[in-house]
Length: 53
Ligand SMILES: [Zn+2]
Image (cartoon, rainbow, N blue to C red):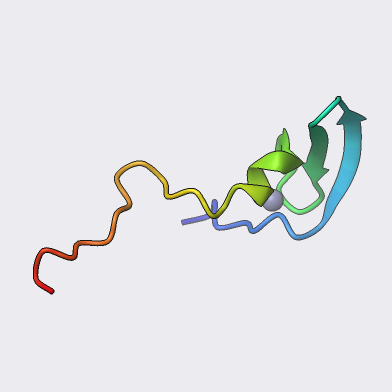
């Protein structure tokens, strides 16, 4: 899948009060850098199945 970019190289686009908008130099995607800091939040539908434990 070609969208496996980890956005390791970014450049600053704009800054808000609590948000920094950056552009990935590798894939050109624009996103809020805050999104990268929220990795600790489990994505919807991505819960560990502990029912067998
Ligand atoms: Zn990227």
